[in-house]
Length: 459
Image 1 (cartoon, one colour):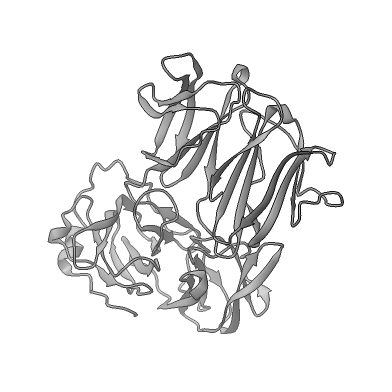
Image 2: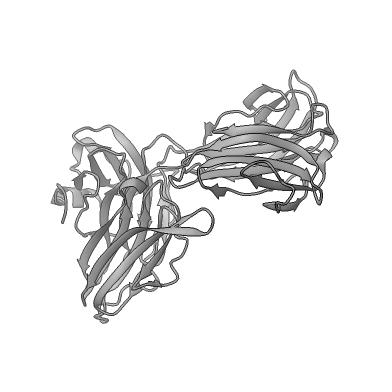
């Protein structure tokens, strides 16, 4: 066992038996996996986790072949248990790069023995990525218990104390189950099934930087819990990645909320206010072309009104939106005033060290169907469009999604579909790896052509 790890004291075990709280952050029960490792089967079991916060999606290979269909595995994802024969394997993690290319990010020889389980975690930032291998004996979870193993997998987080208590228990009266630095991990610890709260504090303090709220853990669950770098909403430096043997899921900090920004893309509409649940003003006096920064709001269901500033007419009334815990969104008021729509899109704010990420929305009703070219020199005469025949649709806008490009200089040209007549020419754009670029094509002020761009994120 690596790291400075304190045993789970008897007093802490007793505190875990307290009655559950009324926390609003209570999650559904974590059930045991449907196909847990069978202790009667002596073959080793293998599980793979992507925990490198700025690395691209990866393919996992063993002895030169893709392992168990593990392709395009993204950050904060764990596989289920994979039963393999005992042997020595050459394991490769292939990082997927722009242009359908890849590079070997990790290469290691791994000897797997019978009656063992192995967690292989791709950990640290892309520049320093490495495998962390955790070996355990293959054994059943004691009846009525849940088994936990905790890993500090957040490279930017300092040494921390990890508390596992009854919901709302005072951590001043508790002992941490572990004190861990990056890449440290605990042994496997069993506790009675029930309701728990996981809190992480800076080592030696009671300053909580992550709070799970109340979690219900079902008997038989065998959980690997990784404190990974938070790339979603909220101020906590970490998000818990929980692997249950079948798949994995995220547990966000209880106060993470959701991040929301608002874009006014209706060329013939006045400046507007954006109001939630008929009372909370989220944005005031936003003119055409305005794009707010991200606002952190509680995760919840909302009714959104968009009204002309100064008590004018309501142009969008009670649009129902759901903002999920930890997620990031952009709300785009689009189309023309007479047919105004609201598109709520989910953003992916995670930056990838190996690529620039570009996302383009078509929100120009006057432009009709368009082709989008991405070239190195702006000459589209002999080029094929990267996206062809992109229509204007509302309220849900057509978009490219996040397109990964190698760092470099590019020209983006938008034409009327099927022609080489440029409607928008960006000029040279210098795109940097690790950056995100979002553009929304909209009408000219007042409506109609020529279209123009609203530029966001790192533009």
